[in-house]
Length: 262
Ligand code: HXC
Image (cartoon, rainbow, N blue to C red; front, top):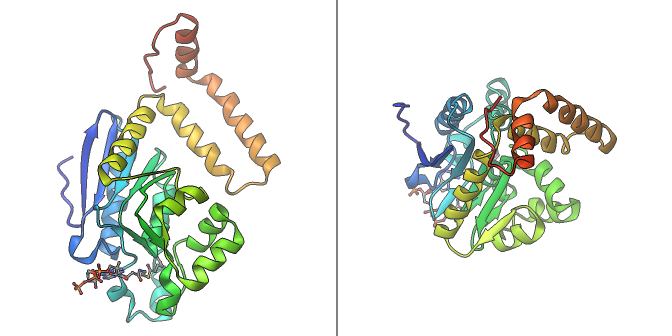
């Protein structure tokens, strides 16, 4: 796109796939406000890029992100945080991007780094990844949805233990608890798998993929009856898409579908 960023890198490693790499190595990818601003700007571009079907968000082998920037937060007052809606812009990650986002986590994913990973649609990690919500050790609490998303992912008791003690948990634990969809022995295997999954998703109808993401996300907000009804409404609406006709005709004709993305 020609846009260059200071704290992130954007690449196109596979057909239909964009990769956003957090790149603030001196601070282990601590998530300062300018980094989040760049991330949101990049995702907005990718969201409207017709040739992008899925996005992989990653960091380095050593750190996905070591948290919000403690040096930026240290002097903040209540009124400054409140009136500037500090951290609120992070939620753009879950509202702006309609395409699937896969977080590939290696190394530290602490505090806001853990919360950022939890915002992704699919989380992959290495067995050795180091997750945690250590905010309690700094005299504060998670502020980007960690308490809510962890409790939904691992249940109340385990979330309470993690948030109250600040103890880290491994990528191996994350996968066993269902926080991560899968864990891998090495960084290289992690990246291959994340890009493979993104490429698979990018190979489907954009309309169907977007709808699928939307309805699964509804399950996190709606009671079951309302969620099932919502799913059915969206399912019905897809009979109005060209790609439903293309996909089912291809099956009947024993051919590979050529998606119109309409
Ligand atoms: C600012 C950070 C940082 C952070 C690391 N650095 N984490 N700077 N904010 N969150 C900086 C260090 O100050 C240091 O800079 C450099 O990165 C390398 O870090 P080291 O500590 O020297 O590395 P290491 O000994 O390998 O230890 C790695 C670590 C440790 C275990 C990840 O850095 C650490 O504990 N970081 C803080 C983790 C944390 O508490 N995160 C939660 C933050 S609160 P210099 O200049 O000294 O070389 C939070 C709130 C979220 O996220 C709520 C809203 C989103």
